[in-house]
Image (cartoon, rainbow, N blue to C red):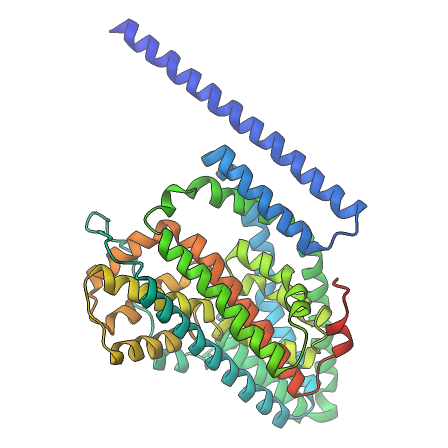
Length: 453
């Protein structure tokens, strides 16, 4: 027995040594890649999005090769996300107030607001329709048995639409800023901007302070974005290494449907609006927002990507701050096309698993509920996963069955969330361009220019 125990200890030590050796090798390779990316940025004219996409590919390869070891560098990606999230509240607050003040007329704000909300709701309806159509055609839930899945105990019931709308008015604006409650912040910022306008010369200096503050936050955002390739690489390596292909086997069809739906929505709906609605070059639009799309894909957070989206839309697409500073923060909160598309696909996926036959009225209920539920969804990774209870309840799926669905999808939801976040921020950029075009607040020379900063 003692001999057997000694052999076992020797074996465990050897395993630990091998594991430590692989981890050391991983860090050597990772540091080498980081140095290479830094040199690439300093010695070449490669744009940021090229370096970010390069980091995405390298991160996926490293994760696939080193597996779970890649999780040891996740903290680098987490630090990058924290740096961006640090800017979200001050950026929304200062840019919205400055944007409202720069309009100079509350009526113009009303015009922009109506157009913005109408376009966001329209694109969301298109998104849910595409999700329902693809879910019906390809039936991703047929033949899947999830009876052995442990229910995910953290399934939460989402707020009702009326509660969410009522909560827009903050009881304490300072508390909302401290807690990062985006909708109340937006509401208060718009009112404060209108108040500054109505105050005339007495409040003019306050408006100038907010304009300067917004510019300072954007400069900080520019500095933080230089860290994007490293943060993105670490995050993608973690996702690729810890989830890999095993989690994809049962969810392969669902994943493919969601990605196809996201691509179709971006090309057909957003592309159609840019090309036919705004009469602007489509290729230039997508080239101009590549930085934001790359960051959105890696962070899975619309809110965290907001500083990058603002920079891309203003610098590359020529949208003036009077529009971008009001449309984009609002979009990061209420425009969740990717979420709506996802909810539609998963609703059909769930109905097919549990053998529920859906009528036309059920499809309409899903479309309406997913559209309303997606409004105000937290712009953080996997937030929409907890909204499933609301959507699934309208077609007769119980809380216990919803828990099974969430438990089944959760292990791979990060990959799904990456795709739908890209759709969300692309929709934000699309609506900002359309509104700016209608308000003559876009520099088309910049939009049509081939240079991207």
